[in-house]
Structure formats: structure tokens, C-alpha cells
Length: 381
Image (cartoon, rainbow, N blue to C red; front, top):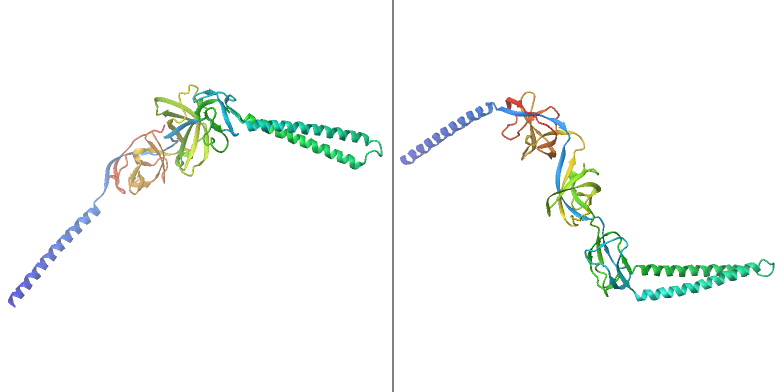
């Protein structure tokens, strides 16, 4: 019993000591916390700038592609055989120049048949017209020709005349089809592909129609095509000058004028298609070349412009550090606009004349007081 009693006294003593140590720690921590809360926070010295308003022209780099100003794949319209091929890949051709001759014996037979039918209908029409004129002349004598006979003669004359015109139209249609056997260039250009040889069967359907007879491209004038993202497409205007470089021609800078705007955004890329015309008389540029295009994206109106270093991005958002009239620091949320040459547009609850930190960083604490500041000038080009 005595042993158990002594053990209980020892255990209670240990608990008392531990509780005393805990109280001392809590008191010590509370005093430290009180000192931190009441300690003043200040920023010794800060470089400030005065916000200005101006216009920003952002230059963006976009990939582009050169394509032919005009490009066409030429197919045969009639079922036929290739008789002659007069050009090859790389041949420069003029508009209307003969590229190939085709032959279709069945079409020649149809032509001869149509000619014979037209001549027969022409003879019948002439006979009907002559008969009607004789009956009409005789009918002027009263009682010689009944009105019904005169009407029948007129109807036959008109019917035979219509049959003649129909035969004439059929002959013209076959003659036009024969003209399709001569394959001619629709515009000036260069033959970029050839898929036929003499004797090959070609036509609008069936075997031989899968590939075009020729590919024709204009290369003395090209199109430069780029796709501008939605964020940059709003302020683009027709007529602007763009500069571009070709990857396969390093060191050379080319210029072109913006001619056409797509006017809508594509569903797949949410971008607008822009086209520039390029004169290429020396043909140093080729369709299919890739380009890097430098495009100017002007602001539609003046806005607040500050140095890029004044804008701070944190995990909570984008801010500038505003110095109020009583030298207090305030984080002001903003949105970025165009950027160019170390300057950036900002949009937020600010106005020209406000003072913000030139070099924004998270070491400048929210709510701190500036003891000393220096106003640094900056310019907007």
C-alpha cells in the first residue's frame, strides 16, 4: 500500500510540472504575437511612375503560307482518248493556249447525224412555209380556201419551224461538246502536274477520271495567307503594310499590303483568315513556302500605358502597386492589353496621374507605408 501511494504522489508531481511548462510557453507565444501585430510595416524607398494615356501598336509574329493566286485542276468533260499532249510539268502557258487534244469517235458520229437531221428539218420547214404562203395567197379570193385549212397550214408551218430550230440547237450542243476535246489553259500560269499520256482514256466518270489531266498555277502573283487569333483580330484593318520573312530565304525581308479579311472566325481555330497579294515576277517565291509574318495590331483608342515591369502576376491575379495620397501601398487588379517595346496596356480602376511602383514585386507589402519615394519618368512612343 505504501508503495502505491508513493507512486501516485510522484505521478501527480510530474503532471503539475508539465502543466506549468505549458502555461509558460503559451504566455511567451502570446506576448510575441502581440509584438508582431503592433510592429509597424513600412517600405523604406520606392521608385514610382505617373500613369499616362496613349496609343499602343502591338507587333505580333504569326506563321503564314504562300499559295498560288490562281490554281486549278483540269479534267476532261467528255469520255475520250488522249490524242496529243502539248505541254509538260514546268511549261509556262498563256490563257487559251492548247494543252492537249482528245478524240471521241462516237461524238463525231453524233455530229454527222445531227447535221443530217438539221438539213432534213430545214427542208421540211421551207416546204411548210412555202405551202402556207400559197394557201394564204389563194384564200384572199373569197370561197376558195376554208378558214380551217388555212389554220392547219399555219400550224404545220410553225411546227416544222420549231422542229428545225430544235435540230439546229442539237447540232450546236454537239459542236460545243467537240470543243471540249481541245484542252486549253484558263489563265496564264505554269503546269504544276501532268497525269496523262497519248492513248490514255479520260472522262468525267469512270476509269481515268480520278486524277486531273493537268494542274495549272499562277506563280507571278501569289497570296500570303495567315490566321489571326480572336484576341488580335478585332483591331486589324484592311490596307495595312506587313513584313514577312521566308524560312528558306534567310536574311531577306518582304513586304505586302493587307488586301482581304475573312470577316468571320473559323470554327476549328477561332481565327480570322487574312490575305495579302504579292507580285513575284522573278518567281523567287514558290507556292507552299512558309513565312513568319510581322503584323501590327493597333489599339482602337488611347488607353493607360505603363512599363511592363510595373505589372505583377501572382497566384491571385494580375496587379499594379498603387501609392495613394497618404503614401499607403495598395494592390490594384488589372487586365493586360497590347504589349510592345517594354510597355503594356492596362485596364482597371486607375486613371492618368496615379502613381504606381515602377518595379512591382510581392516584397512590397499590401498596406505598408512608403517613407521615401522617387518619381521616375517614362515615355510612350
